[in-house]
Image (cartoon, rainbow, N blue to C red):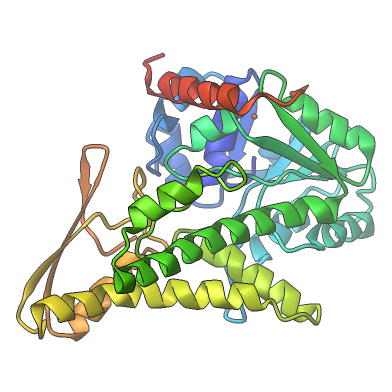
Length: 380
């Protein structure tokens, strides 16, 4: 497993929970030292317990040769942050590919877990072939882990997407998830790459939509909570991501909306809907300050507390958190800002930052997710 961040660490720990032997490699010495010492460098409910009960199956290393030696699968779970242009930065991905030893024994399969633009798989395949690593397979297996419920999301997923150039490679990756009951979506590599971007873009669209509905509700005297409940009970729509608020943030939605807009633009298509989704999200953060000014008048000299700083509950991730924008705007208006975040009893200050091919009924999937969450909370 290349990358010991949210995706790599959770995926590696959960694969170990399924009985696999895991080596997790990262390039940050301090992170590897902490993991070897039994410390978890990120906050994710249940992850520490999963790592503890599988400590005999997981090793941590800085050495790429140690990670590759004897490995049947080479999972890539490194960061792909947006560049200034909005494209995904694939430097870490290609660094992993280029650092692979000149001679890789056996027939390992590179499995892309990182969220990458459509076409990345073809570029990686060409890069491998150019180095004479034609025997190394390639599969796209995008992640759908939500921070705050990532362990449960791995153990009881809505689907597992596997895109491959070779059916045999796809079969091998599918077999890794033995014991995880959900639907397997098999496709070509570009389609698998697109699924993640399209999923996050659609969820972001729902958030911006309900926020627009909330804004209109305020003007006409309607209650957006009741409206959202009435809409969500429609079986064609469902209730998820229909909670009005101050906009989406985090490491995925903003990055993936931007990446899909950029992908469309680079392909000669203007994705107008996503432009609107983005604009609504940006304006929603600023509406908070406008409301305060409406009710409190000038904010200069006023003491304002921000309670809950991360971009969502059950995490301490401050990436693209709306609270940052709100805090800066309040400070620029002369307010005194006091901020605190509580993640499951731990107070943090602001300022820094899985196969059987069967479809389970929705109720059973929900029961499995609840059971997985209870297991994650239980002591080993």
